[in-house]
Image (cartoon, rainbow, N blue to C red):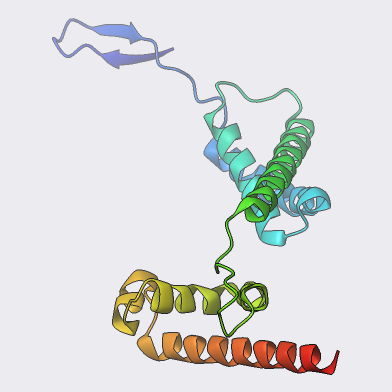
Length: 187
């Protein structure tokens, strides 16, 4: 307990303050001593260096919030990093399975009509094969009927970049669709 002068001048009184059991300077030394090994340890499950670094940083933030220091700091850190990395891997796996299921259940982008001049399935496959940044611009431009300036407001990118992505995406769709037509004619 720490004592402080009584504001009324009546001497000192005892005020109970929670002791800071984990000293920030000690925590910094612990981080310097173990962070590299902990990141390497986390990469076993996460692969990515950035994700491993995030897990280690979160574990140290959790440690700082603890009411008291663990008896065996190093063992606690490795256990906490392992648990967090495994948990994050499981979450990513569940998220991936959920996204794949949603993608499989999503409605088609194109309605198949016999009178259409293009094959809807080929067009859908062509759109799906585009990089996400090209597909995003094409969908906003064609289906959203947005101008490049409006798309720039949404994405925060310059219109010249968006135009390049739009043009490249359309060129790729054209190439895929034309190759689909040529392979269909040959059979």
